[in-house]
Image (cartoon, rainbow, N blue to C red; front, side):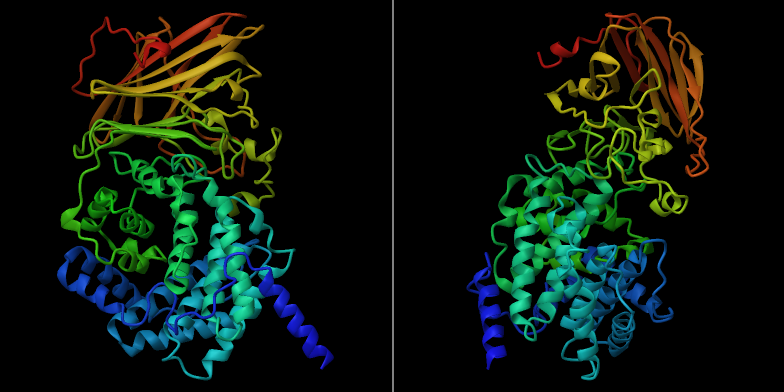
Length: 621
């Protein structure tokens, strides 16, 4: 009797501590996560009536056919991570569970059950790197919930126990749950995974499930604050696809199962972030891949369909529609692709509108500006300008760097990330953020390997921060300005950069610099995949794929444009074949000012020799 009293007291205390779910009494029967019973009919109707949805469905079904021939997953850890196995488990179980619910073909059910039992019998899901647990718990929860009534009765307790013991319970251990107080993607992924696990086994562990979900609703506010004020995601394009997608998976799950998002998605910053994401894709099809992002092209983003449905903004699907038209089997590598058909239910591609904004600026922890001369012209100009700070999660010393597209090609590029294990396996301490951290010696991570300024070959200041100070949106001029002084305060008294598109024809990059009490040599550089031929008179011709672009230095006069190798010296650095640094150096005397004007002129465009670029303070006039 004494033990029963203690148990009841503990349970009552837990319930009293709930902040958001005090009045939650029940949840729907299985399936309750994202796609409720009978809702497959809406997806089937979309597939039958719209070839775009049919294409996505076709990729998923083909991937499921391929999965039938694969060996079950094994618990093989790479370095400190089991993450690749967790990601693949999520892909297989999500796809197979979707395929069974939509087609009712038992072969997909049988294979999904095999995958569920296999990973449930792993010794653990690697809680020391909790992203692995977050994704694996989500994978197993989806399969358990969606297939609950059709799985063998003997399988249910095995899978349920794995969710509890290998997923949820480790999340309550302080050794493993520091992500609860993080504001980056770990918070989004891990809270989403734990919530899916809690929803899956709710009827067996109702009090624990309520605690886990309540905890997640409160904790996930931290990363959602980082979208303020405009929607720019501090970790960049690649991690937007990770963190934001799992954030939306979380919101979708609690809304369907609990009937509310608890006000989480009402903030302007979060609701605007799909616009940020869309603007991050250049006219070449390549993304603005600053920070730890890959160098790939824009593709299908399931989360974008959630935002389009939530905001009723069909223009958010403009690039998604194009991506689906050109869909390939590689789309089947996206482990949450079935979510696109769930979140896109009711959306019509024949109603998609062309975006109207040609420039987008987002402030926040890592401000950026993106501009283009057209959304519909494949030869249009695109420029992305990076401000912010190296100190953000996954940040690089890339303040002032820019990417630039024209005529379907990328001319100024960013290397993006180097695969983490390739560095960690060689002993590189990759995650330090202090000024002297080993991270900044990785070639791709410091400013010497970005399209920005470098003073006396020194690194940018980690504790510096640059905001976008001006946004210019005129019919004949789109531009943005950033004050970079704080990241160069050891080398310059002032450093400002403006980037703009002039007359929809060419790009100007303008720097205004004041040196401090000692002389300094500033290097202006641009990373390019093009072949570079310096041609005298402060210019160079860039060529690639039969197309060309001229780099022309208007100021200062008589500079010598040259190139530098992009091959790093450390054995742990990744090679960078087919790339070049092009630019020039200028020596500034102590306490002097210097203006740098560089034009990037696509082929077929003529710029008047007498062209004058106004000072940055006059750009808005």
